[in-house]
Image (cartoon, rainbow, N blue to C red; front, side, top):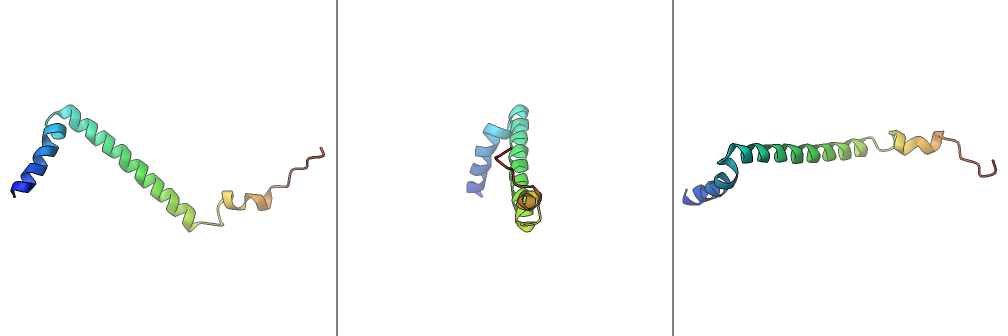
Length: 69
């Protein structure tokens, strides 16, 4: 239990002791969490729907651009 109190003290003193640093840590954590979840869900969605999304099939429906016009 001595080791755990040392770890908690290292986290408590610089971060949780003052309200301003606690709010800042929560905001930074929320931002990082949002970015990670957004990137992971975007990757999963693109992988699951490969070949069905506009970015994958647009070459089939757009006419080729002519250079002689």
